[in-house]
Structure formats: C-alpha cells, structure tokens
Length: 359
Image 1 (tube, rainbow, N blue to C red):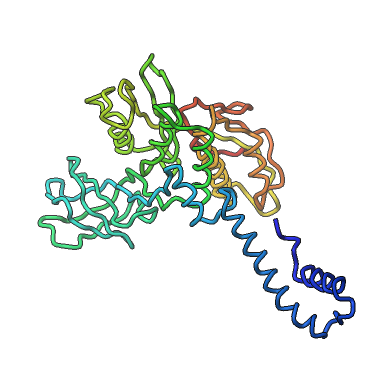
Image 2 (tube, one colour):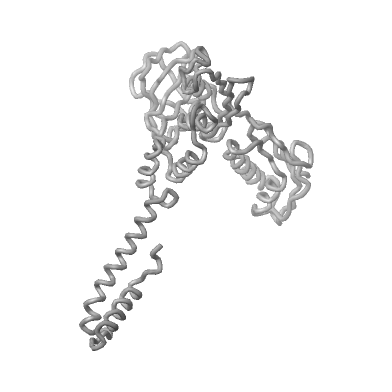
C-alpha cells in the first residue's frame, strides 16, 4: 500500500513545503535545512515500511505464520501437530514375548512396542513425531535385554507419521473453514474431523451411502497411498465405533451410522513406442520411464480427495517421457492395452502396472 512512498519523495516533499512557507531559506543539498530534514525523511520511510508490513500481517492471505495462527485461533483453528508413525514388526522366534514399552532402534529413530497382533507380529510407535519414522522395512535392535529374542524387523508402515502442519496448509484450511461453514454433521464438519486424525491425507464423504442416516468415509493416507487396516480402524473408532454405531459415542452426530473404508489401488499397464537418441536403448531408459510414471501417478493420488474420479491420460505420460534424455519421440501409447485414457472409479488411485516398450 505504501510501496510508492520513498526516501527521496519524502525529502523533496518536506523541502518543497519549507520553500513555499519560507522562500528565503536555502533548501539546496548541503544546506542546514536539507541536513536537518534528511534523517527525518529516512525515519519516515522506515515508518511507512513498518506500516506496510503491519498491514500485511492483518490479512490472512498475507500474514506470516505467527500472525496467521492468531487469526486462525479466532475461528477455533490451530495448526495440526506432528504425529508419530506406527509400524508393524516381526519378532523372532514367533513365541518370544515382548512387553509393551520395550524400545528398539532402527536407524536414527527409536520405536516403542504398543501391542501384540499375534503370530509373532507387533505394533510399534516411533518416539519421534513426524515423517522421520515412516519406515516400511528395517532391522530393529533392542535397547535392552529381551529374553529369547533372536531378531526383529519392521515389515510394514501402518499409520504414517506427519510433520507439523505447514503455513500454507493452515492458511488454506482457514479459508476453507470460512467458505464451507462446518456445522451439525455436514460434509465440511466430517472433513474437518477426519483430516485432524494423524496419518490421514484426504477423505471423500458419501452422505446417505446406504440410505438416510448412513455416511461412508473413504480415506487416503498421508503418503497418498492405500491406508492400512490399522489406520482405517483408527478413523472408524474416532468417528463412530462399530459396536455403538449411530449412538454418538464418536465424533459423528447421534443417528449417523458411519462406515470408514480406504482408497483402493488400481494397477495401470503402460505400453509405449519410443524413438531413442543415438546410444540409448530401452534397458537404459526403463528406470527413468518408470520413475516418471510413478511421479505422475503420485501427483494424481495427491489430488484424489478433491476430484470426482481420477483420469490417467496418455498425453500426460507421453509429455513427461518426451522430456527425458535419450528420448527423441513417443507414440502409440496404450493404457491397459487400449489407446484411450483410463478413468478410475471414484474410490481408487492409480499405481504402476507393467511398463513395456514396442520392439
């Protein structure tokens, strides 16, 4: 707002005003009046800069994190804190007993035993909140003596850990809250409740899914992949425990019977005809092509919650592959054996199937 106010402009305005009121005064550079007014003009410019900054901090779209948090607090919105990852681990031999609270290290992280699943498998929670504990494999080393234990390893990431909510995500949530008005069990309120649960990256809400009073929630995890059964069960318990469905013991309103499901993965096979640059072959390019397809599918998955249905487009794959070194041209691309885009059901995300190149 005050970006046009400069030191030079302020100084000339003050000197001009003095020249009008007292024509006999010397206002040239180096004069006594000029020397007296120059520092005042500099301080006034600093004041206008501070006023401009204060103005930015007063609006949610330009506020820095500290002031955005204060603005959000006026609507009962606070930044989502970091959450800890939960993993599944296998202990050997199968009959070994590991008490809750036993600690193991894996790389730079420490995990604590939460519960036994049976068959030699256990759930462990990372002691460090955030994405650092999102491991799907790795050797666990006990930090104390465990009688009879011969080995332990992580086999699956059950609930992804999340870092503290970033500033832009919080800003968007503030504007979404204003636009949607969460209230009384409407879709906006369901979304607000579910997205506050650690490990959830997105949700689709299906009102009256099986008739009046029923709600289906389909979730994706915070890594934008298929959620584990453990994460689905956690959201179910928080929203509407199955054993007391519709009774309001969870976050869902009384009378709402909620069913929580996870997004499903659908493999999409890709076949391409590539014209190679000199010295290149499919053997050289294959890992780069698969990485490009994985990145595209991940991009689609990140937008799943806000889309009616995801569409895997041939044009997008060809455009991205064409940007790779060693590729001169791409043509005749097939998805699942046909020369057409693939539209997925609204509860599915794409994952890479087979990737082949015409010989």
